[in-house]
Image 1 (cartoon, one colour):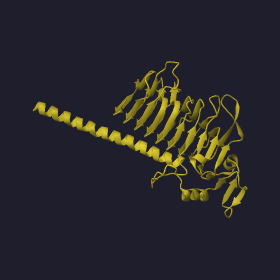
Image 2 (cartoon, rainbow, N blue to C red):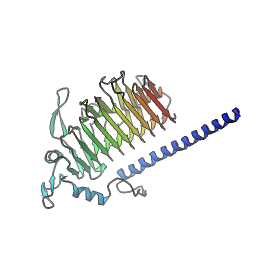
Image 3 (cartoon, rainbow, N blue to C red):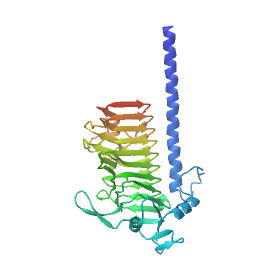
Image 4 (cartoon, helix red, strand yellow):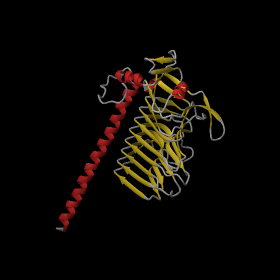
Length: 362
């Protein structure tokens, strides 16, 4: 009877593992299908690939474009005469600085096809001045199409509430020496159906100066390109950064989120769901080196890491996920090593309060 019970238990475990493997495969298929469908919708404007579009796609069709344009309080178009239109219900302006200046909390700004940059000079932490797009109000900024609308240079978000970007490409810097970056200083910033292209040291900074209120970033269905030069796409610092990444595609960067020895006051929450990391040297690498009063928590589910060592001369390993201190929950992730002429590490965990790993494969 003991042997029968043992066999029954082993069979049950085997069936359970089989169910988990099927779920894992279905997860990975869904990630790729969602991404490539969205990629086609965003970039294949003329449908040259002759791919049937998903009826539930969130990208803007012609009717949605007209609806967003008509519902916007402010339309930015460099080729139109500025002034009031539609029975004085809308403003037309020629640049994004003017739109942000006259906007009120809750307004929607619609960007027609074009390339936009800020003319306002702001002072950085080191005292140097730099032209930037400064956002002081809680607004929604919608582009006519991701590949047709570009925001150049630095962006500083200071409003205390929520700012949403949709269908916009952020071109952060021209080369590695550029000082451009996106700074999210407070409240929530949501980027949906956007593209971030950047070769700079750090593309996006989430900075939480308040010990009471979160500073949060949501990246949803975004394409992120490090152009094989960017040191890290994402940085966080301060008291309470919160980062949520869903259904994104990250490629050709030395690091996605690499944090070495943040402040002891920092307690971060990061969730990464159904995201592809392709040609990335370091995926998520968080070296906390301390126990903050509130443990940091990281949850990574349904992600695919394809590691590639862009920089080999220093001998440091390429790594998919590394964390010291805090809580880590890793579920249904897959790690693929591109080549074997450099050191690689799949997952490295040290000195954690709690670690939960389920069906992560290398």
